[in-house]
Image (cartoon, rainbow, N blue to C red; front, side):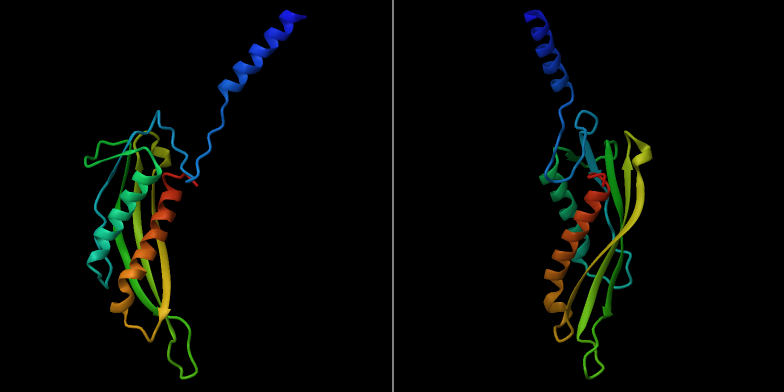
Length: 170
């Protein structure tokens, strides 16, 4: 009986060690034994309306998110396990809420980014998608006065969407 209990204890220990669930708070489901590196290409602005700082702001936001939420090393070459590149395809302003005087009281700034995500370890997980995010602001404000803050907020939203759809594998 003692031998059976010892054997059972070892069996429980062995089984519990072989299937350890892994939880992360950021949603990334990365197998670090397979994926170690990532690279980013440029995201040039191809939109009709151009806000020049947007490209650098977006690229930095993406790199920062990966560095803060994963253990992947960001490299400059193309021979990495994962790669992201694309272009900023939309930067649009559209009137939203119409006031009593028939003029728009809210304006929406929408930024759209096309992302080509390449998974060199598992090519079937690669994708080519567009992502959009927006913020509304009062039409009584000049775009130039709120543009920096809006772009910061929108690029954060875009980075979250892109991260979750690619590296986060949601």
